[in-house]
Image (tube, rainbow, N blue to C red; front, side, top):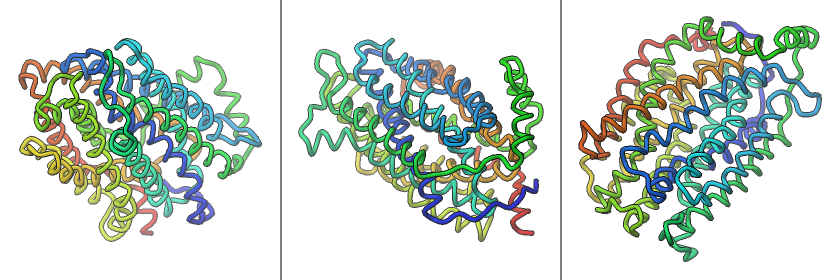
Amino acid sequence: MHQLAKPKLSFWQIWHMSFGFFGIQFGFALQNTNTSRIFSTLGAEIDSLSILWLAAPITGLLVQPVIGYLSDNTWHPTWGRRRPFFFVGSVLASIAMFLMPNSSALWMAVFVLWLMDASINVSMEPFRAFVGDKLDASQQTGGFAMQTFFIGCGGVIASLLPTIFTDYLGVSNVPVNGAIPDTVRYSFYVGGSVYFLAVMWTVLLSKEDAPADMNAFLAERAANKGLMNAVKEILGGFFKMPKTMIQLAIVQFFTWVALFSMWVYTTPSIASGVFHSTDAQSSAYQEAGNWVGIMFAMYGGVSAIAAFLLPMLAKVTSRKFVHLLCLVIGGLSLISIFAITTKEMLLLPMVGVGIAWASVLTMPYAILAGALPANKMGYYMGLFNFFVVIPQIVAGVVLGAILKHVFANQSVKVLMLGGACMVLAGLLTLFVQDEAEKVVAN
């Protein structure tokens, strides 16, 4: 699909428009690293973790297409199109991050997870559309790579926070009377503050261009007013998806089953297999939780570096080949965790996971952006998130039963299953058609 060329942006313009993702990933990294730990500390059984985690993907399923649709039909002369949603989401997410570690019961933690994930999605989805709005096709891969760089940097620091508070600031890492450890509480406080400040950086330092034809934009917005029209438009998009989007959806399904498996079951797997504890109230289990933070920091750091290497590799090969290669490396790395018995060696597979994570956050969106109509960029980016959250919902429903009845509660085998899914996702990339690469080549 051919689109009008857009002005080339400078390095610092792309930096400013992407910096908010540094804060957004603070929220996601703290959530992904610590949610299973918080749930277990508050009394959750291992085979119920995936069900309790359903709060996260379900909110994404409900929120992102709606926010994408609304942001496409928003324009304010000062705030622009996407930035109002950046701001509102950052305020709500920061509040939720202060509430999460103060949950005193399991049901409270689950409720706050709903609030936190919904709020993060409000600010995150328009960031994806922001790249499509502002960057020409030749810069879009680099734009998504810049976002991935900040995602990696934010993920590293946020994942390490509990360990930093434990080892360098002397904060207690042990639950007292069943409460969340102070290391986790303070980490979320820092995260909530960084989230808001980083997103505001983008809000204040980035500008948005008004619609090229304001009269046409206002006429289309007027035609789309009303709840029923919005629902009809959102649901109708399923039957109008570009071919490339359908092909990527299949790849995304198996990719995100793998990632969900990793986020939910790494902590109990490492606690049991390496730290020899299944008691979430024990110091050994909480130490395992800190080490998982270090592992996740490793994959975040690798992704930040790989974010700038992958576009260069894509130029001499193709975006499809890069995504295939990275997913296969990541999947084999996840599978290898089964054979590792020392905590230091656990950092090695996280290198492979980091390479895969960099590609997951860059290549599908870069491929997709070139296949979308400019006036519906936000909506389709939001709709594309269905293929991020639906596999997580499926995994959340079935993995607990598989863990209990097939894997005899050996959660590391769920990680192996996730790794196999990621390898399959890589192979399915062969069937994706990348329209934008044809345009750039011509």
